[in-house]
Image 1 (spheres, rainbow, N blue to C red):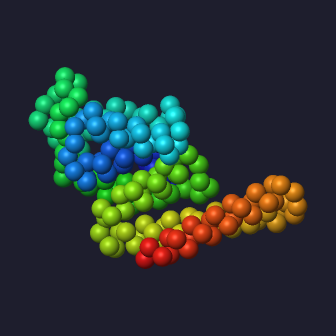
Image 2 (spheres, rainbow, N blue to C red):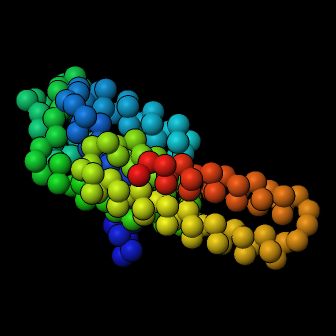
Length: 174
């Protein structure tokens, strides 16, 4: 993690994998496909998002399996107790504003797996996401104030409207 308790790209991939396994056991090949597909659909194809092999999760004790992943891609994986603890740590991390590809992926993952957190942690994450939107809103409003007219100012207005809608949506989750 970065010093501000936000995730680095490899931790976002780890969150994607552990979240999938927290929902239920699955074959390694399916897990790899699900993670690759989700990440690719959120941020597009990106070498930065490939991260280390998912096989490391087994070496680190975050997942358990009854076979050798490298020999059998259909070996069933399950999340370990240590993996559950790491999942909770990753899910309760901060998100950086302004939003970039990594933070966009982290927000999507947090919303994707929000139901796996207890009520207290879920509320804290919704509050944190709301505060991130507020920070981004202030930044964009300041930028728009300095750009009084033109298509750029109109585009900023569109972005501001989206942020306000996102903030209202997040508040409705509570």
